[in-house]
Length: 190
Image (cartoon, rainbow, N blue to C red; front, side, top):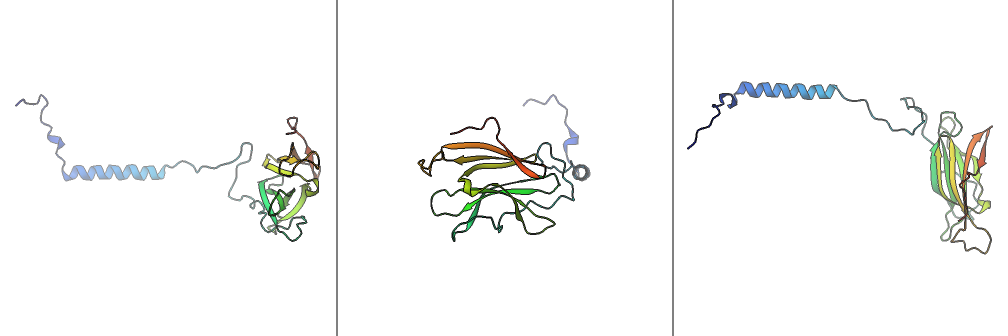
């Protein structure tokens, strides 16, 4: 048998005092980690002011809002929504895309701006797209006070209602007490 070149390590035999010292050191590390926590993470869009504990009321919920739609006995349905502060007053508004709930086909949509003043019931304050324009809405978004949408439509009555052949990208921004519509340069037809 070959003997070890390393001397016998007498201190490797644990005694109760070693266990108590180790437990006390671990407790100190855990307590220190509990006291030294990073600040809470917050999520916000670029360019938006930081939120505080006195944040504004939540954006209006379109559920239960009576939209100015003539559905002939059918109910209306909200197909898309987006929220953000559109008029710079610090309270969010909601942009809702609503249409009649038809059994088949794609009825035209309306795009509406909802607000809630002083915690009241949400209400429609502006119509951005009338259903009479016979448009569908592919998408809607709110960013930095600007509403953007992709509108789908038909070039003539002969085009099947299943297959819109026109596409228009539009945006609205609150200016001078009303929503002003513009069409970005990249807007095109399908």
